[in-house]
Image (cartoon, rainbow, N blue to C red):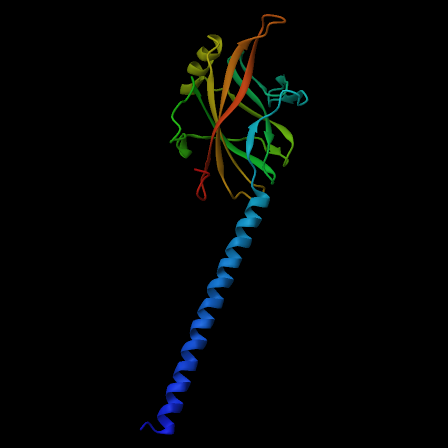
Length: 215
């Protein structure tokens, strides 16, 4: 027969074990709730850039050398003027948070690979702060001015031949987190009303850099 002392010790041990299990479950549940709350907060701040709509208003923007460009909704421009390449796209932020453009890259032609984006060290830093509010329309701009830049000639040649361009934007939320790369195609076409070349913007792919993406 077990003594009352032994029974008491066993009961105390069992109680301690039950308390430990309950504490572990509570902590795990609390951590899960905190993680869910963190994800929800991130989604409230996440931007996502796409091409603007056809009926979005025209916008005008000036480059640092006082070169002016105007673009309509869902349109962009690709110009080679006085030895400078000027690129502009009309965009819309369909995400829930303010988007901040950080860097960009451009390549001639349409990029059809869907599993890879340009290496981050190949992106050009954005020299001007460009913010696009949540649910609103905005602009992106980039320029290549240095003749020594190896890309200037190939992009200028593509523009002169009216060939498509692939542009990838690296952007974040307003605190620099939730970095995203979005790929856009800038596609030339001839307007029926005046036979002039215009450029259409088409978003094609998105990559999340700081967490799992949508695929």
